[in-house]
Length: 372
Ligand code: AGP
Picture: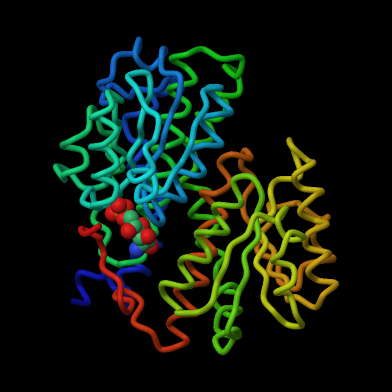
C-alpha cells in the first residue's frame, strides 16, 4: 500500500532514501566515542581470528559485489589472503579449506540456497563461518558460527540497495576489526578510517541530495540498448553492481568491466554515442589508479562514447573528458563504494521507470532465490 511505501511510489525509492539511516544503524553500538570497535557478536575467539591464514567470502548477486569490495579491504588492512567467490561456483569446485580458514557468507535474506550450501560445505571442512545478514533468525545465520546483522530494516524491492550499502559497512567493520585483532602496520590508518566510517551516513545523504541531474540523464537514455560501466580497484565491483541494477530493472544490456581490461576486448564495443559510466577513484592517495582511469575515459571518448563520470568533489582533472559529471563526497579510497554506488541505483531506478517497467517486481526475478 501507499502507506507501506512511506509516501514513495516504489519500495525501491523508499529503500534508496533510507540508506543514510540504514548505514548508521549498521554502525550503531559498534564504534564507541573513542573510535573503538565493539563487535562482540563475532563469537569466534580472537585467537582463531589471529591464527586464520585465509579468508574466503561466498555470496550471490549484489552480496557478491559487496564481497568483492571486502576482499580489497581485508587484504589491505589485515594482510591475510582473501578470495571472494560466487557461492554457486565455490560449492562445486572442491575448494581447499581447513580449520584455519575464515569463511564469510554474505546474504540479505539469509535464505539463498547457493550461499547456504557453500557455508555447509565450508563447515564440513572445519572452517569457521561468519554470516553477514539482514534477516534475523534466518537459515544462514542459524547455521553459521557467528553473525553480524546489518540492521538495514526489511528490504522489499527485489533490487537490493540499502542491503548492499549496509553489507559494505559490515564488511569494512569486519576488515578493520580483523586488522585490529591481528595488529598490522596500518593501525593509524585503521583508526582514521573508523572515524570516517562513523560519519558515512552524512556523506550518503549528501549524494542523495544531488540526484536530480542523474534522474534527468537517466530519462534521456531511456531508448538506448546498451550501457557500459568501467571501474578499477573497488570501483570495479561498483561498476558490476551498476550494470546488475540496470539489467534487473531496465532490462537493458549493461556490462561492467575492470577498466584495465578495456584493451583486452571490451573497447571493441565502443561506438558513437554508447553511454559509458566511469567510476573514478580519488586523485589523492593512490593517484596511479586515478591517472590510469583518466586515460581510459579519454580512450572511450576518442571513440565516440558518451561519458558519464562519477568523481570525487574537487577532482578537476576529469572535467574535460566528462559529458556528464556526477560528484561524490571525498572518502578514503576503500570506502568510496558507499557513495559511488548511490547514483547508479538512482540511475537504474529512474531509467526503468522511464521505460515503463515495474521497479519493485522486475520480470523473472524473486527477492530470494531459495533453489539451487
Ligand atoms: C540484487 O539486486 C539481486 N536481486 C540479487 O542479486 C541478490 O543480491 C542475490 O540474489 C543475493 O540475495 P541474498 O543477499 O538474499 O543472499
